[in-house]
Image 1 (cartoon, helix red, strand yellow):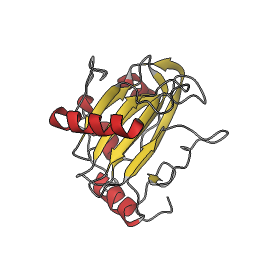
Image 2: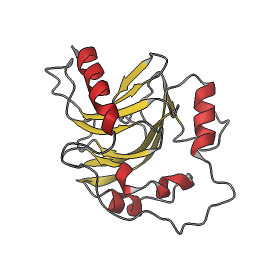
Image 3: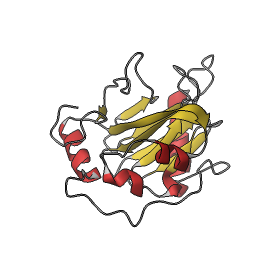
Image 4: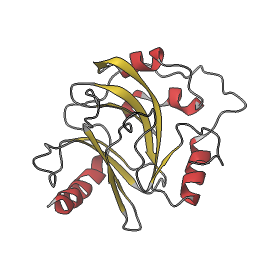
Length: 201
């Protein structure tokens, strides 16, 4: 049932990928005047490293705030300076907030620009084979800011990558218990603690 729903969502969603169903994207301003640092790591460099590792997606945990919020811009301002220049340049049409807001901020993107990234509201645990409401669809492999997980240890977003080769990746971004890193998932490269290409993911 879940595969059928996912296939249907892929077929219907490819024609109009982007923010959907009530515009869950927050408005705000990006940072076009930021000056690139000479040591800035690019999306292309991370994508190349992840591709060499055979992964389908990249995740960067950017930090958490004490209280649940839906204001991505405020969360960005409250966190320490990021080692990834491109994070502050992600436009607001690629800011996604979980319904009800969240505490954890992630940057995620598909490794291949040919693959499709969907973000869904996580379905009720009593119905694990059903897909929740679609919040975002992107086919260009560009990075997305995701604010989610308003309650500790309770992920509220499902990320799905549909690969042109037929592989499918399905996971919920969340922190491992007792750590400050995303929970390891096969097929997802976590560069949160290793912003330099070539470092062990």
